[in-house]
Amino acid sequence: MLKNSDSMSFEDLGTIYRMEKKSNTVSAVRKDLYPAMAGLIISIRTEYEKHLSADPDSIICEGVNQRRKKAILMSKEITEIRMGKIASLALIGARGGQNAVDHFTPEERTYYDSILDISKKHVGIVDRLSGKKKFEPPEIDSEPAAEKKVPEPATVRKKPVPEPAAEEMPEPAAEEVPACVPEEPDKKETVEEEMVVIRVLEDLPLFSGPDRNYELSKEDIVRMPKGMAMALIRREKAVMVNPGP
Image (cartoon, rainbow, N blue to C red; front, side, top):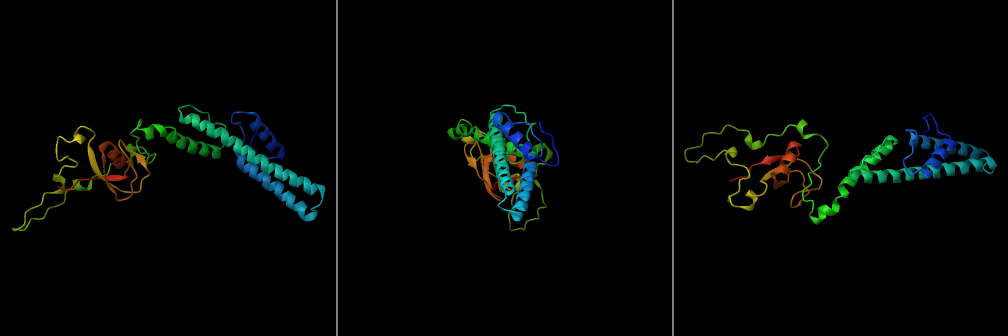
């Protein structure tokens, strides 16, 4: 493994290039690999421009130019080879495998995590489209639901009801109307999961439900299974709505 230093030499770059070409795994390299390769290219380019302005036809100028071109090509190929290896590891991880990520640079760890996340969603696409996997909980954010407070439905908060005029009939308070009670007790939804009505508080990404996909926008009013609705409410993405009489 090459140690970190203030700068990378052309010989260091060649060593890394040969390691990556020879090995089927991600080689152990310095953690600042990409800034170091960029710094080497900048250094060689500066040297080339200096010789170019002094004597563009000299053999020294041409030699530095060839080294500059080779450094650019090796850096690009090192990047692409490591990308391919990391992408393969992400697919293994999406299938449930465990990968060692100690040899990754910070940039490569970000790349790996992104591909892993996408691969986990894509690996089961046929099951979802064929109906084998009907329900997929929405991945709205990574914050644990327990750390957030469940917003209190607006209709639960009781407000003083003014005395009605003699000629008016008093209207029932909103909280007296039970939420999401079917009009007919023998409807199919009493056998399946209870359905509730929610109001969406912000735009949400597309996610799958038991019988349909949901693509919801802010202020949408939607009726969905209670389990899914509560997942959104716990993350403060929606609030419960009591339907009118």
